[in-house]
Length: 416
Image (tube, rainbow, N blue to C red; front, side, top):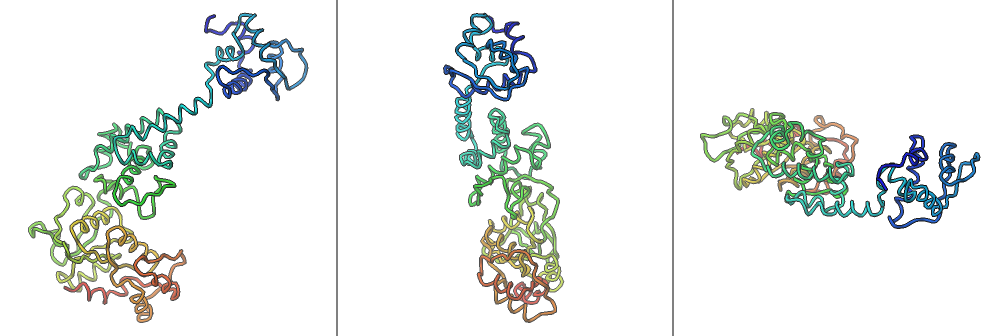
């Protein structure tokens, strides 16, 4: 028997108006094993044209009803005797293609998804996909298409093989590895997987199992790219500093006593050789404090770095390089919830120690300089990981203290 539908079968069941009916019949067979045939099929909600077509196939009398009970063995025999198809299943396959067993198809797909982590050459990507949340991320990005998922894995690994880079612009990395300068822009599937895999592979990274692509407030894509040596807006928000020493005086970063900036581009492409091993480097939150220190102390000021609020990529890279060079970081900030959040991040990320940032320091400032204080914001309280009594003291007073308001005590520590 030819694979092409018999013209009589096409006339009986192949009309476009019967596509919905054929779909319902196919769905019944998709739930069965290929060699399984039910005794009857019960169909309800039939349109007039659908009932008429089934009546012609089964020999049922035409009447205005919307349901039918089909003796499948009898119908199969009728189709065979007429020479139009071997069975109803065969008729449906001749008209619309093979009927696939759904359970078998799901099992095959599941087996294919389960092998994907083992196909990864990059440990970060393999580790990401071994977790249910990571594999779920890949499925979402591939829209449940296993073939598309494999292409995403191949493209992601092509990028990961180039990392860490040495100050390579993201657009250049994308163009050279993927053939599209925008293929690693924010929101692109490969970019999402690269960032998640890189975080997975980083030692000491805290991963969130519920959603590996989600970023904590302290973690942004630009910062992850920077740690991988990839520049995104490398000239934006350079890091402000004062009197950072380097190992070779002829390569000093700025005139003694003068504030200066280091861009992410410079930090990644030509990292300074900092001479800070076992030396204190102070970290403040506000640029105004750097200006005050430069005006009051100049070259006599200890090394000072400014986070300028929550650190961006350049500030984070500078702090990381200083910590790697052996600096003993001491951090300060505003006595408000945002300041505590920044200090928590700095202490947790780089092993910094608090600098005049304990409850006693806050109490002294809150009672000693009332004209310089302002109301504490109404946001959720932030616990200080270095002093469990600080947040309750701030909540009790209900006031925040700007870093500039306690500049006198900070300058005493900075004077060297």
